[in-house]
Image (tube, rainbow, N blue to C red):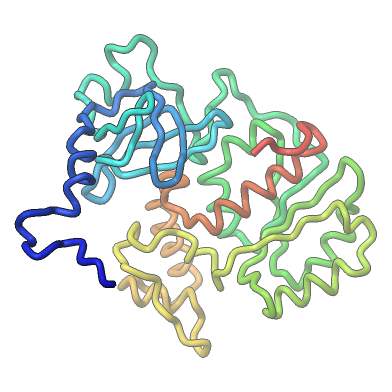
Length: 301
């Protein structure tokens, strides 16, 4: 038997009526700072801590009880006190918390809650190592305030080929952890094979965590729309990736000074963590948790 859910006359029965009725029951409310809502598709529950316009769309930032942050587009698909709601842009006075008493807490570029009296502290024995200056620049731009408060110094490897030499000189051990960020760290790459060989016989290897991102160069961890591209160019292996990228951006790339100026132009477009790919954010956050675990214990995230 074949069941025709539309019946013999499609105008006498609407199979989508129930869904439309449910949607119609959702009431529109302004996305007010401090309200706690649930995003239906992901189940993410958090306090509304920011509402802004991004890429022509209004988005809402929800911060959960562990201070983790996610951003969603405004509109339907939220629950408030268990009831469906459609979030709309807040009234002008609510965008910055005006009219609600104290302003919303300030956040660092990484999305963390800023400490009111945060000051840089003496550096811990533990360190984060990155391959080059541009990696360090990007980490400083997004996570610098957090790292300064926690006393985590970032040092340069000057290439993954120096990993063994640098770690041997550093001497990882209890209370002296090393987190390492590697470019193009994907299974089967020469970088991943080199790291495996180094850690296989390195004294103190359990106190070392090597993570990486899939990009050949950390430039590509910046979201391409921030520099006016829909995607980063596919630079042939015969050409230096920085040179090919700057050519795609219409910028000079003849000298090291050109390349340095091009990177400064890209870095200037990075405002905070939202302008960086999640594949880098997750790895850096994990490295920070690792080197701080002796001070704070395992991360609750």
